Image (cartoon, rainbow, N blue to C red; front, side):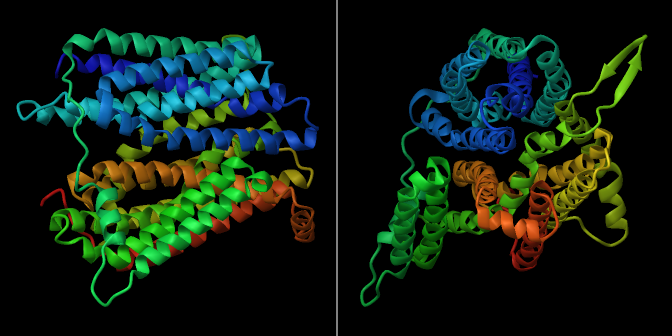
Amino acid sequence: MPRQIPYIIANEGCERFSFYGMRNILTPFLISSLLLLLPEAERAGDAKHVFHTFVIGVYFFPLLGGWLADRFFGKYHTVLWLSLVYCAGHACLAAFENDVRGFYAGLFLIALGSGGIKPLVSSFVGDQFDHTNKHKAKLVFDAFYWIINFGSFFASLLMPVFLRDYGASVAFGIPGILMFVATLVFWSGRKGYVHVAPGAADPHSFLRVARSALLARRPGQGRPGLSVAALGAAGAVAALAMAPTWGFVIAACTALVLLLAFGGIGVAMQLERARGLHPDSAVDGVRGVLRVLVVFALVTPFWSLFDQKASTWIVQANGMLRPTLSLFGSEIRFEPAQMQALNPLLVMLLIPFNNIAVFPLLRRLGWEPTALRRMTAGIALSALSWVAIGTIQVVMDGGTPLSMAWQVLPYALLTMGEVLVSATGLEFAYSQAPASMKGAIMAFWSLAVTVGSLWVLIVNASVKNETVLGHIAGTGLGVMAFQMYFFAAFAFLAALAFGWYARRYRVVDYYRS
């Protein structure tokens, strides 16, 4: 193993502890402290809005980090400087526990720092290997993935206790210290790293090929694709004009979705016009990315469900009975946010269980668990988890108190869905486009998570409308239970659409070619 690798793995472990440590106590802190001046009925909704706005930032800023690293500073310097921004964000959270603006500034800095380095650290690991030691890369990436879940597990288990017993300054300060340690460890390995210099702009990148396709003319033919893209641009401008009503985040994200959707359709309509202006391999690569974009779009409902385990599910757990554990003569009381520790624990158990037991059994039964089949099942399992969590809410709304332990089943179903979707999706996407389009694939994967949180913000905003609330009341369900069943139905429809598209999807394999 290259001697510099332990520095990167240690950095990742500390960074993931710091991120999940603050992320998993964000919702309970907002509800119990920072948003106390709001009416009690509004706190949970506003806390969810803040949380998912933060998630949108975390998964949008990878585009900025990747661009800075590829064009200007290289991976090492970009990671180092954005890590310092990350540390400053943690310092703001610890220092401004009673100052809304200062606290939100800290969240922005963490989203910028965390999101900016997100696509770089794993690829920086890959840069440390060459043809002489590439056979050791898989072992290192396995350790890399394991340390991420290890840090997440202990952060989820410990930070809610520190928030309860020692207050927000300590609970947010500890992740900040871990992030500073992560930065120091990463800097300490600087002399041993392999540095890949930033390259010049690729004349055959995804965006350049797409632009050529839209603008190219053919004698006697119009440019229908450009018209479709222009329609998306007009819709984006209209969405931005709604910012005073919808809020800036919803308006900006909606504009981005319209640009991507209509722009992608327009490029697909005229893509053949880019041949001759760009190599056939680049044009075919863009076509592969566009096909994968449909897959990513159908996965966005999964992300809208998955990320709510740190918002909506914590809100539910706040109203449940908290189990206690007797250990060495003392009583340990579990906090709602600690339930999230189940997710990384189950991930570490389910991935080997699937590979050793489930998938071989399915093959013996004559059913090959292809990537698209696994993703279809994963989206459906996430929907089932929300049926379960919604049923728990209905029982509670009926006046029956329930223990937080009832959330174990929904967490298990959701985590199985994550393993089948998240661990499979990006690897599958990489196989469907050439290496030159890897950056575009990673960017769109991050944007899929961003759009997932956009759906949450839209649904969250809609339940503030009196007409919508009247319709919900007519169903006999409470608002939270209705939202839970709505998201379950949303994911079931996505699973059906995904399965339909998967049956018609022609799989290619750029790994082998």
